[in-house]
Length: 168
Image 1: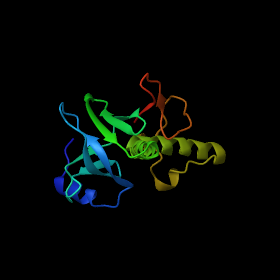
Image 2: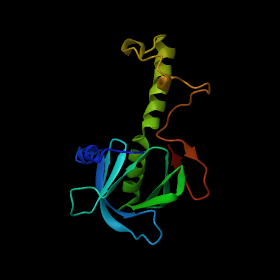
Image 3: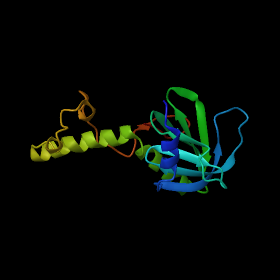
Image 4: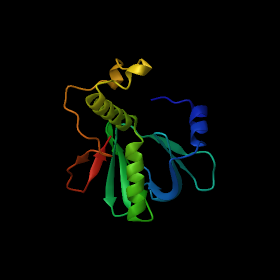
């Protein structure tokens, strides 16, 4: 996917949902854990050298998997590039859980599934489509699939011998 560099720089300076200095290891063999300022802005995870204002890089948090590695470490891998794994070390288990939750909820697909679920619930309770007033009720991105809807939790739990993981 291509991005406009100026727009990404501008986005990286916006207020963040979450920001902290975390240990981070990139996906390349031989990468070591280094302290980075990590900022979650909308559905991008920006990472900076701790003494610089421009980001070193950004991860688009779509089609990815967030997995707890141990008590205070989590990883992000991308479904189309499973070998591309980023590792993040937090100061505590609580901080690790908060980061994982925020990253999972940042994806467009998570928000879309929630919108579809709540749209269906409102329609079931009131008999009215809440999107009709905006003229977007027929758009494909807001349609319910033929599968039955499930209550959206903050994530879908997958069974994994290495512990819980979540896919977006």
